[in-house]
Image (cartoon, rainbow, N blue to C red; front, side, top):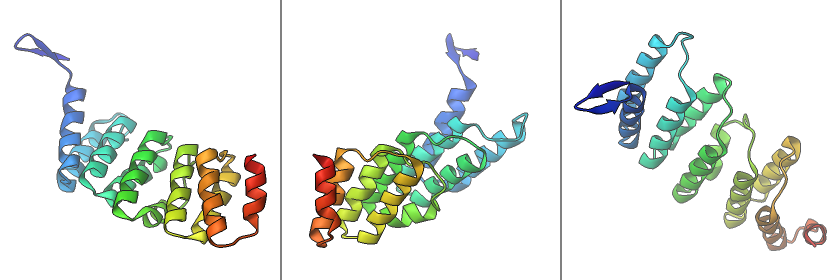
Length: 176
């Protein structure tokens, strides 16, 4: 940290502010330049999780979901655990843009999906009447041991009733 005009300035904080600003404006070229500089200066040649998360959040704010997905994929590639709130924000933005399924598919099922994201994905499946997507998300949750909360179960129940699936009664009984 450096002192300037009597104020202590943390260069890492300033760097993250620059990353956030460029990402929020959707300036991928500037973001990539900064990340390459970080990679070159890092002792182990990797980008910090915080940097990737800041960029991902900025891209979500800018509506550049593919850029945000790229940051999540980089986190996975580097072995980082994805912060659950990051996934929640990504899928909330994707829902507003109508690209939930496309965003989910672009992640290739490579990540552990937290309970609140499973609920959001199942709610999207209900609203879009995508029975197959709902089944896929349900299977993903079961495979990962992610419990289905009340909202997820309600979304599935509404969808099963809507498409007259016999599993609706079984699910209703499970919810009691």
